Image (tube, rainbow, N blue to C red; front, side):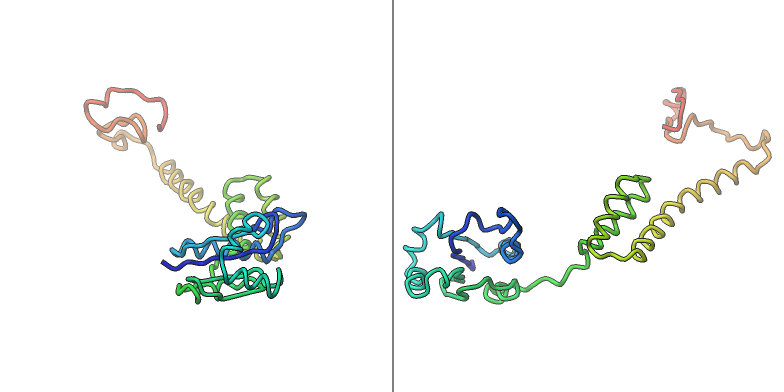
Length: 207
C-alpha cells in the first residue's frame, strides 16, 4: 500500500478552519488528503507543535529542520521518499506521486447546487427556502438569468402533473352519467380492498 506522510509546521490544527479566518491553502490540502485516503492511500500527518517526537525520529525530517528550520516545512514523503518541502503540493501532484488517477472535474458545483435548491423551493412552494438559496446563489455569482431558467424549469415540472390530473378530471366530468357507466365491480377507493374477501370493508377516502 502506498503511504503518504506529511510533516506540518507548528500550528493549532491542520484543517485551516480553526483560526480567526479560513486558510484556503490548508483547507484545500486537507480536502486533497481526504480524497487521497479514499483512493486507498495510507495518509498520516504530523504537527510539529503537538508531535515533535515524530520529527526527531525521522532522520530526513530532522536533517531538513536542522538545515532549513521551519522553512523546510511542510515536508511530504511518499513511501519514505521526500517529494515536497516548504509548500503544500496540489491534488494532481499527490495523485501522480501516489500512482492514482485524478477524477474528472465535477459539474455539480456550489452554484449548480443552489440552482437545484431554487428549483426544489419552487416545487415545494417554500418561500423561506427560495429566499435563502436565492441569496446564496447571488453571493456565488449566479446570474438572475440562470436563476430564472431554474425557476421556469421547476415550474414546468411542477405544472405537468397538475395539468394531467385536470385533463383526467375533465374527461370524466364531460361524460353523461348513465346506468351503463357504472362499473360492474364497485371499489371503495383507489387504495381500497383489492380481493373479494376484503371487498366488504369500507373506506371513506382514496387511501
